[in-house]
Amino acid sequence: MWKLSSGDAFEARFEDLRRTLHRLRRSPLSLVGLAIVLGLIGMAIFAPQIAPYPEDIATVHFDRTFQPPSREHWFGTDEVGRDVLSRVIFGTRISLSIGLAVLAIALAIGVPLGLIAGYMGGLVNTVIMRLTDIFLAIPPVVLAMAVSALLTPTLENSIFAIAFSWWPWYTRLIQGQVLSIKEETFVEASRSAGASAFYIAFKEILPNVLTILIVKVTLDIGYAVLTGAVLGFLGLGVRPPTPEWGTMASKGRLHLPTRWWLTTFPGLAIFITVLGFNLLGDGLRDAFDVELE
Image 1 (tube, one colour):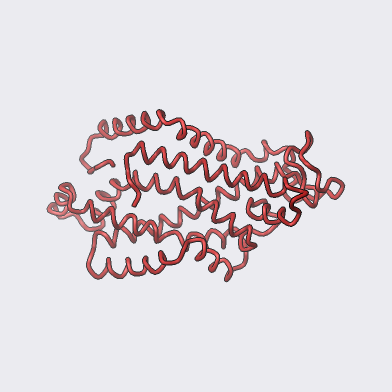
Image 2 (cartoon, one colour):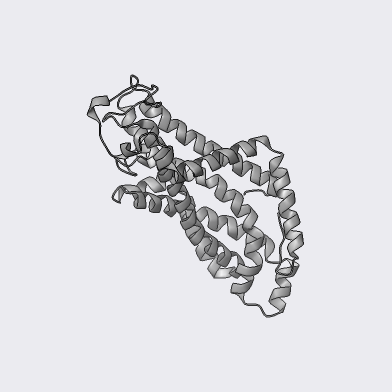
């Protein structure tokens, strides 16, 4: 893992980055993951241009209900005649929005708390980490389900419910990293020079945990997407007609096994998304040479 201080030369950082990218390029599976992630991002951005029937996000066509996959509708149509492929493509926006928003909130809460707990120590560390342990005692999916059950099923509430269960993992991760770094020479030098605790935590220590954060976030985006799909499948997430993959799979299961395409293609989208972020995350972990506790 990189050990950076504010006095490190730009050339040294650039060389570290170059070596990291070289190691990443040497991993075929990592490149597959990167291709999947870039493809998903492109699909989300250009969904209106890619989807063959962009109007089918909410429009119903009762004259073409339950059509199996064909040349006109590659993924078939659903119970109200909407093109499943178009809805899967637009669902990329919903699922990636959930994943990215959940991680942004988890980072905004978990990282500062982890920095404060690890650097301050004492009673502050004890209080923050005991609170964290309470949340960590409950599986994230179960906690997200419990919170979602108390809220109106909307995209925003799904994001909040998942983020509510996710931030403690980042607090625990960062706190452990800070404990291993705060006695380093460059931190002691800043402390001796009279730097404030805030400056040391956010300007000296935080840059040294960025690599492990990048790896953790990359892996967790896939899991956050999966958790959002679970909530949607159970009826606790985004409600129809919003094209969310978990909700689409849940509606489709009512018509199994004859209308298999209604569940299969949203399920494949979830699988490919989780696989892509996992492959990329594993590649970044090897390239950065970090270990997740």
